Amino acid sequence: MLKIGVPSKGRLMEKTFDWFGARGVTMRQTGAEREYSGAVDGVEGVELVMLSAGEIPRELSAGRIHLGVTGSDLVRDKLADWQMQVAELAPLGFGHADLIIAVPSVWIDVDTLDDLDAAAAAFRATHGFRLRIATKYHRLVRDFLTENGVADYQLVDSQGATEGTVKNLTAEAVADITSSGETLRANHLKILSDGLIHQSQATLFASRAADWGQARTAMTTLAAQLGIASPAL
Image (tube, rainbow, N blue to C red; front, top):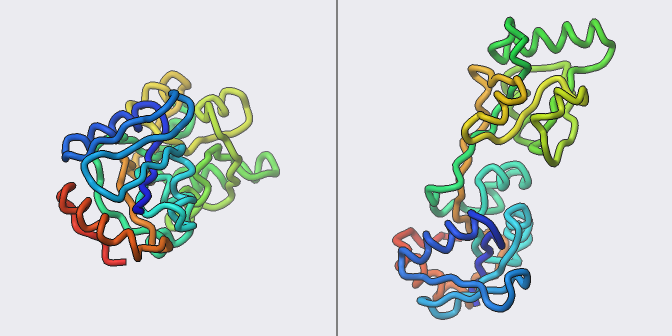
């Protein structure tokens, strides 16, 4: 049985169902709304596994599901050497959001990563501790800042309302997902001109750790139905 993990609620679930449905593969919830169980019609030998988008990278990495739909940002942030653990099969064209770095709008002299590096050094010299950047995307942000030579900062964990951390004085800058930028502007933040870390969207991934023996036939049939290449795993 080929197991495919999909988001268990919200617009990501609805859009995932729509994407597969448009290609002749019908996904549906079974039982009560909060039971998080589902079924697949249109291809034999496929089992639907309802998970949160944040759980899907972990389940792919562990090989407990063969396929998974989740944000490309989540896979890259949660899985070290992600390309060794999963294969990216198809971008699905929805769930678009940019992972960016933003600083207070009043920092008129800070527009680039070089400016941020200089500001961070000045901040540490003045205050005696590193400039704080609030985020939940620790791996992606750390790698991006390292690649761009930004030092003298520390990441502080934020699992919600990240844009409000500057106003609440728990961080000096943020690295977060944004679609329209409205929440950033409402919190008097601006995106660095070169502060785009990753352009995310919902993506279909395949697990390299899963047991593909008996699932291979179903995968070949499903790939043909979806119009994608069957993964060579």
